[in-house]
Image (cartoon, rainbow, N blue to C red; front, side, top):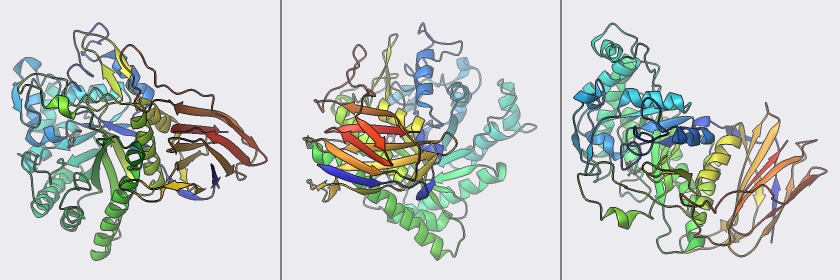
Length: 497
Ligand code: AHR
């Protein structure tokens, strides 16, 4: 089988916003307690943060981390998590039905984010709370001083404001599972008024409004349209969330799911632009895909967890090789929409549906999905180019005309480097790629990284990481023609300089 590609450095989609390589830490399961924070672990620092986890997060070069939820934020009192730890209340956490000890809160998380070189994307509670709690939080984190909340922050040992730039107005407010679920009208109103007050406190912040929780929601995309119509002038981004799973063990169909994601992005983009036209506005609303991943392996185990425990192992999906392929394809889809998708958060980062896992009081290790995420984050910074691709196609249960090859390319002019990311979804055969890359005169193949495995269900564990990339991919570049072998079911990163 053969595929053809043409790549021209002048054929730009848009500059990639680095924040598409963001992630997410929720107060859920062992993400915080036993994940990033474990004071009794021998590798923990003076604040109780695990240094091995910090190093793994740094390997991924995560630019922004969403916090503290997720569903959890919709019944969260942020004031519970500030001040002396000894005084912090234990609360029933209603989203996941656990006990929240509040040992980690806003200031500790801001410290941790600094340690991993990431910005914080902060979510406010629009389930049980509203304007007042949100504007006070912005004053606490961002106001320099001389007022009640900013001086309280100083009294807690934080002289300088955290200057958090990006804020989410609630989480998945369309979902019946959400504490304080809202109709689109109710949500649009509270998002607008809360956003207005938050921007009065600090006009430099950017706001993300909730869209639908996934494409299957009955109110999609009307929820987006109504919210945008009401809150257009206050907000800057609309959020998208989506998780996939291979529940019927149909790998060909499963791997095509990024076509659904592509459709989701196109629909939300059109909805934004329809409201823009309706409002005769010059302002463009962009997309924040602030929850995305594979999530299904742990569903059954989670039904057996006793309520009201502290940091139980919830949502601990163990990812296999095919999950890594779909994660790679989803990253490619973001790059193809670099003109409108400006933020994205792999949900989540540690232990909870995560690329990084830890054992309590033990090791930390990398899941299969760690690698495509790392490659995209490291080599996918620059300008996203439009590859003109002709690939053989297949049909699956839910999709027609699925290209076997997914591809995206990022040109980093400063480093004089161009990287092509590709997934071969053909489960039987390799595909030979012939690419016209003449506009990159004088470039050579620096590296062809491959993730391949004969077993689509192969996983990594704390003791054995058997699904890892190598850089022995077969490709050559001569007279402006790149020839590459894309092995059956494989993730490929071809770096040229
Ligand atoms: O990431 C896990 C959960 O998925 C989040 O809390 C919620 O926003 C979504 O439903």
